[in-house]
Length: 62
Image (cartoon, rainbow, N blue to C red; front, side, top):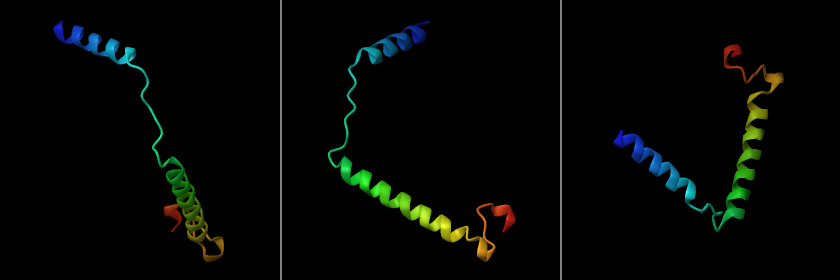
């Protein structure tokens, strides 16, 4: 019973706390890096899935 009461108290305290999320100071750098890596992944997918070479994303077809 005490464990349940403690759990309820902790949940209520967590709900009362103000939202403290904030973006990292170098958010734009992180965003640029993510976009750059996304483009690299797309390029690699195009290379790996070249139908002229008989390549496929489905590893069962390899």
